[in-house]
Image: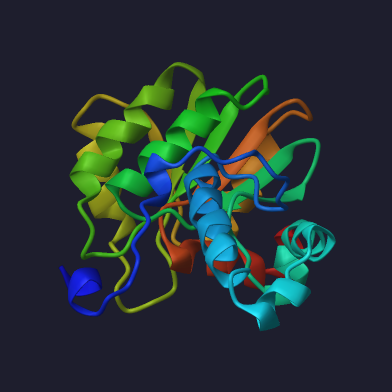
Length: 208
């Protein structure tokens, strides 16, 4: 309605078929975002000023270096190999659902899930998603260093009630260090559940 009132065109990116273009951000959820990006580029190119700037080469270069150019971090970011250490800032049910799907496809011998949340998220439903990894995962529950942190004991208690085994750590640093000690080179360590958890990871020089 707003578009009609203002005489603006409107496009729904999820209803359009777009070519696949490369991007430094490797989360599967970025595929939907890329449709939106391409729709935006199409519209901007209709304006002479932007048309001369948004060449195919410029767009390809920008997407290939998006982390470097924008400082964006924690979007399915691989921090090390053997074992793989991956983090993602997905922090609600929908975001964790995407993360779980990608972890199920992650080539590795065993998963180590370092996980913490803040206290205003639906952690019960998030745990339902995490359960889908239980056949080949070890869980390390923790809490971020912020006032909104969900106490690790609260998170662990809800999971243990479902008869899953978890380890608990008071800091993200301790949890990741424990996972690194136990993981084999062919394993994968995932760190997530909150932007604050990922921030704690990225700020710790010892485990980067």
